[in-house]
Image 1 (cartoon, rainbow, N blue to C red):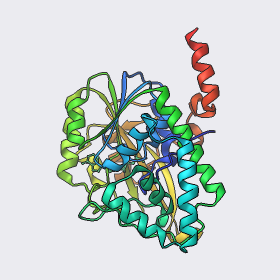
Image 2: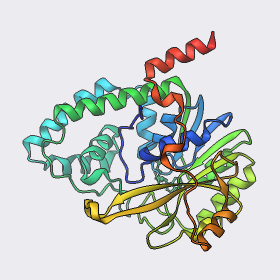
Image 3: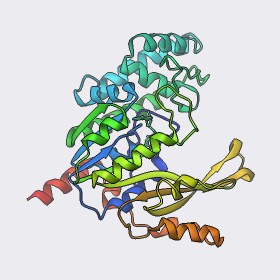
Length: 327
Ligand SMILES: C[S@@+](CC[C@H](N)C(=O)[O-])C[C@H]1O[C@@H](n2cnc3c(N)ncnc32)[C@H](O)[C@@H]1O
């Protein structure tokens, strides 16, 4: 199965949830796919709607994807840029990373953004109070060895093709502006930051904002899906049963390892909340009773959901498939 991974990395990336999200929306029709919080864009780029409005408050993300769209950045350019900058990184035993970071923080070049995203510690995206990228180096001076340069170049090529095959609009704006543009035929996928978790220049989130998001989505009359979490070993996300109480919910178990140790394997229940009923979703009120009765919080197991055909095709195969369907 082919998931197209975007070249930009971020701690909130939903690569592991794409199949599941897609399996839920596959049966639903919509005129336009809207993401007020696109982040890396992995969800939209794999769903590949014909028409999309993709927004984020982080200007660097939007600038990068707009540059792919206008072909100001191409895979060929990325290859030569990373080769050259990667060799400077190696020669300076990694010190060059900080030169690029300083340069990026003064002129915001999208190629430098890619360089930082792929050579910073843990592929994190974090900005300080002044909006400056402040993640340290991953401490691998030979980070841009040929294999990685090829991998990133291919990612840029694939995502550029996907963008250019569709009618995609990228906008650097706050979610409140995006909500104003939502129309009733849209499907809005929202993946906001978790409340109170992040303290980042472009990425903080409060209860008040979650309330505004809820009201905006409900009032829009569009179909919406919200990614969030239901519970982990320690607590339940109470907002699911307050702000989002009138939604449907579908959940999936996701494991993460604390400190990379198998013994510290913790489960978190990821949730999709929606105003539409998916095949395996239930009402939030029913989930609430399940929790009170100590019953399963899972609405579906991994093996059950159908993988949309599109995710098993290469981009070339998909193009042929589309041409064939148009005949
Ligand atoms: C959890 S991430 C989205 C991850 C994305 N679904 C992915 O898979 O890569 C949340 C995104 O919301 C953006 N964001 C935070 N506050 C925002 C706001 N007020 N308006 C618009 N975007 C915002 C952040 O910059 C970040 O990219």
